[in-house]
Image (cartoon, rainbow, N blue to C red; front, side, top):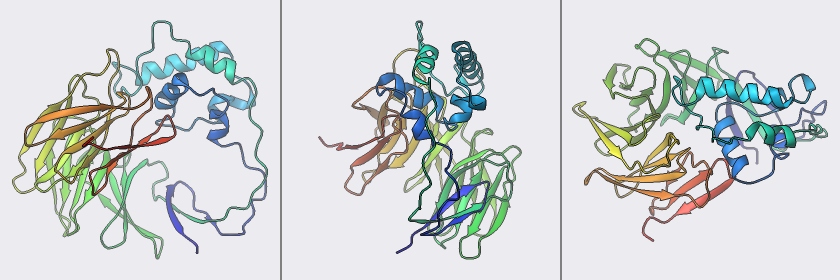
Length: 340
């Protein structure tokens, strides 16, 4: 059986079973990461440095040459200046007083990995080119009608893909610099779209009418419950914040959640999911925890991951209440039983 995988990218290509690549591909990101010794330093590096871009030869060996120690220091310093605490998009943890990351990278990335031999891929992969090549497609949902709805983070647009014909329909969001990130689609076709930069949640009715609600924060994810939609402040920490938009009245309520993360660490609230008991579950990419928030009592409980710097990211909750948590930086999957 051939399975079709929908990928969102800047090029269109189809790989079929038995199609052989014509030349050896460049080493993948995993080949470069495999040169780094496992442990807390590597997990911290993965969270800070690969959350937004691939770590490959362009970064590790620019121009095919090994980076010098000074080059690593300059690169790391530049990234901290752009994305560390106090920057407009603070997603990198503070360096430690005796930070040795540059030396660790220089020492372990001495020789570039060798490109893999040509291979014959077994699945069929179909890629669909986004109409705006410079866009950043962020979140993707298969709608009730089978079409694929994608948020265009840089162009303030939504893309609707018909995978049968391969055609895209573009839907503009009537908010300047909308910065759409996460979204949710109700069974009746109503869209709930999170607008990061403007600090809003937008609603699009099945007939295409838009409404917006100010949530007062740069939020990252959305979670639907019986009454409305929850969002989480991506950069709110000590304490972190949640906001709820009532689907019927549009009323917005803001709550705080547990804040006991280590000093100097921005927790980076990430995924949101609604559990079968009504609790809202949230992961903290940098905080190394997941939080369970009870909207009825307005209280929360934190669960630390089994290892530090593990990067809990896109969690989900099963029907029996088990919380499944992929550890982005550790390459492991955790199952949390909230009862025990």
